[in-house]
Amino acid sequence: MPYPAIVDVAQRKTSNAQVEGVIGRNTGNVEGFIANAVIEPNRVVKFDTAAQNVIRSALAADLHIGVYVGVLNSVVGETIPVAVDGVVIAEAGAAITQGAQLSTDTVGRVVTAATTNRLIGKALQAAGAAGDKIKVLLADRSLVV
Image (cartoon, rainbow, N blue to C red; front, side, top):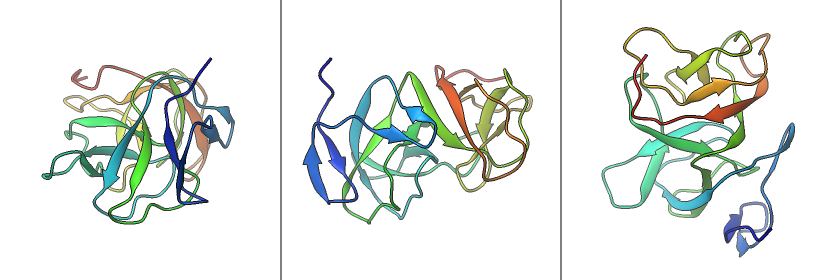
């Protein structure tokens, strides 16, 4: 199965490699967007004000577009790989129960969604604490809990 061209952040070059996550492979569509800030791997992103630019999601009400699936912190102005659907690895911002609906905290980590939060997806694994990496099934980001 061919994979879309993405940026190999470690080598700072474009490649057709599959993006590897901490726990196995990310599956689904990976699109390239321009980082308009430093973004850590496995964090949820949203569009910034400039066309095709992304930044970390910082509010549960943000219109999340996906998860940055690179292996190093992004560099401002570089094209980065963002998974926009499928199963991805995301960093938890707190303990999470398997199957929980997810939104984000103030630094783009996934957390259990509360009423009126916009969803990023569903936890396919539990997280014991902030910083854990878990599998997430990305959902329609227009949905609100």
